[in-house]
Image 1 (spheres, rainbow, N blue to C red):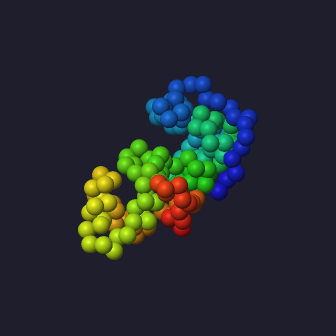
Image 2: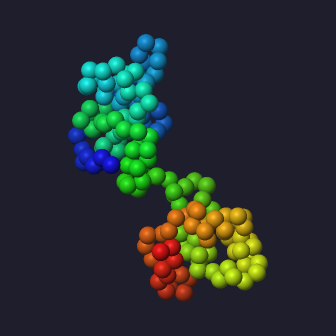
Image 3: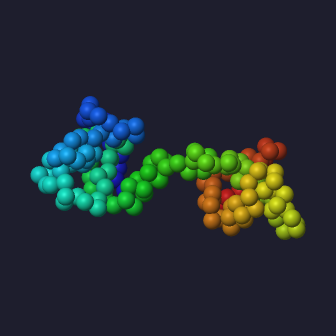
Length: 159
């Protein structure tokens, strides 16, 4: 993973997408401004970086400073997002119906009792399949910090 930079960004002041990435018009095409900046700084054609992403070490999509840009794979880019806590997951995901606290409560529930998963699903207004995937650790991967349960006690849920 690349190390993020503090500042010295050169901000693109031309047209931008809603997510902040600049666009340019070149030969009837509209490549991203940071891709063009990277290629010009390295004296290479855009076609040479086909299949690669140009990553912002500064985490600023508007930045076109070549010193802040580096090539990588899609997997590298996702790893940067995760390491820098910029990925939409858990409660920050727009479709999440549960909080980390609720997931901890689900994991702490005694599910050995027949019908308990169905009861949890009704309580939290989610499907039984979702409850099962949470309990199996297939989604909502283990929570890194202890969570207080509703009684104020610290729970080791998710560890």
